[in-house]
Length: 180
Image 1 (cartoon, rainbow, N blue to C red):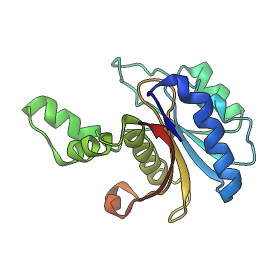
Image 2: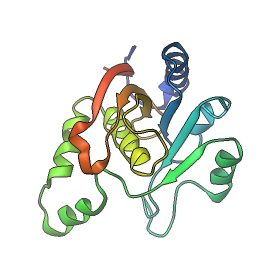
Image 3: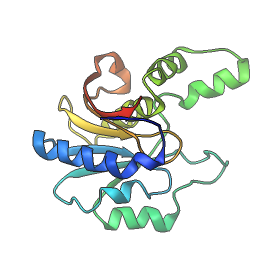
């Protein structure tokens, strides 16, 4: 499925397509990007699946704060989702180098290249890497990763993630949906 535009207006349909594909392909592990918890709520009714919600890191966009409130964080966990808040795999420390020294560094080039396929593709790859690094999804097993552009989600991919230390072993198998 290709959406005519990017953004949160595609969230419900992206969730439906991801869950339908998970059922059809017997994929039990889904990783979804969420900043406030609203997107992750589209998945929490599926207690038969391992749903990992990945939030923004603390300090983004406001130092000392997190967009995901404690109430939203507790709500997601109480409704059966695993929650991951960690340094972003495709920025993290490297972003501090580019800000300080005004250069472009390898991980930022990888992120920019993934964005050629859409911001949601970059986010889906990133959150899948983070979830595998945290041990929240199985190693060498296809999963569905869901990402978006700004808020909401608009991209779902079937992929086999790799650890950040072995990033180039990562494989994207299929696009379920994304913006054109």
